[in-house]
Image (cartoon, rainbow, N blue to C red; front, top):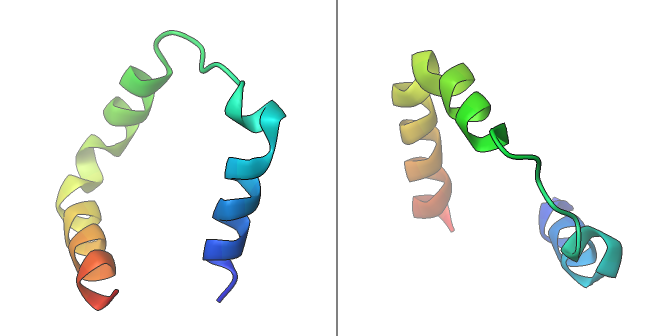
Amino acid sequence: MGGGTLRRSFSRDQSVRDAKIAPGTAKRILHFAAPYKKVLFVFLLLSFWVH
């Protein structure tokens, strides 16, 4: 599909490359994702295995 194209366009866009993430964002994401960690692990494992 178009996921690779979108990812490449973001990596070329200087405004996206220079963007800073607010402090605490990663902690909030990890806290939110905690109940889904097994499902996310399987999803990521299969995603990388297929490619």
